[in-house]
Image (cartoon, rainbow, N blue to C red):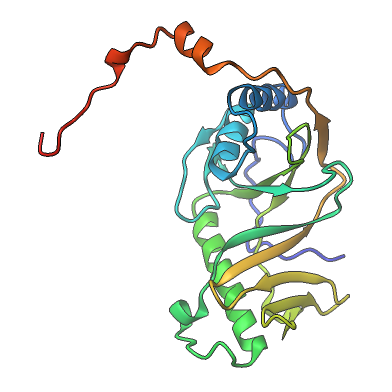
Length: 246
């Protein structure tokens, strides 16, 4: 299947080839997940925490941004980070990535959301492409790193994909029975995008590559809260009550 085009092809080398994570990556990642399970029992890993964990695992800087496409930076490369739940992360082949709120009503003054779905769908992609362009003006390489996770985090998979522009004339848009817009690749009729008029949520449907890294972790015994507080020397003087106006 043909891939969406990149606007530019940079001659500047990335920190490592796409999907070929650096040495020690999996050990660092697994260590962080075990620590999370020990200190946050019952809680999953979501966006900001995944950004921080991935940045630590590759030795990058975590710099949360409003755009969400360059939250992690290492040299000439920037990453956006996504998490997806799956019953079996090791065998999942297609995933849905919530990729921002693209509002043609705001960006293009499309006030009639019942207008021609092709026009609206192409404008949804124009908004995405404009965001990607803004990031690619600053970085030679832009990627998305995805954590596919089981509910209990004992099974996970990680992969990277290039963050790309999408050709407007390649996709056919139509409304589904729920009133959402779906974009299908005209070459093979594969469903690639969903856009929800109410809330303007834009979803990209990605194929999980063979280069994904699958792993499992053994859940640790959760750290007892009182023992942890004792270990760090906590006492009541650490809490200071501030009166209004002080």
